[in-house]
Length: 91
Image (tube, rainbow, N blue to C red; front, side, top):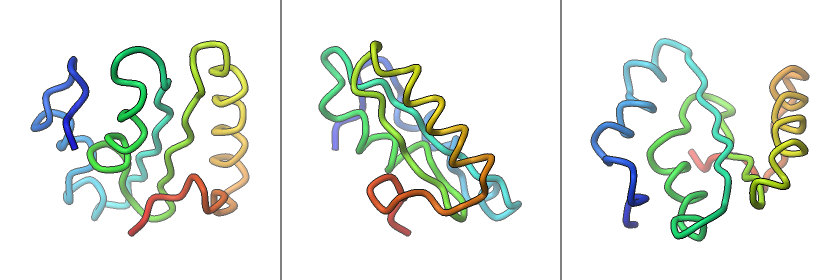
C-alpha cells in the first residue's frame, strides 16, 4: 500500500514498533479521511500506526465528523471494552 504523500513510511513504522507494543503500549488511530490521501489513510494507519493488544483505528469521515469520531474513540478507550469489530486491528 502506498504511504500517504506527507508521511515517511520508515518514520511512521516506529509508531507501532515491536519494542513499544511489547512494553504494553497501545496505540490507537483516528485518521481524518479527507483530501488526496483519504481513500488510503485508514489502511495505512492499520499497517503503520496502531499497535498493541486491543488497538483500533476509528476513522473520521472528513473534518466535519472529527468531533463525533474523537468522542467515540475516547468512550471506547475509557470504557476498556473491546472496540467494535469494524474498528479493531487484525492481529
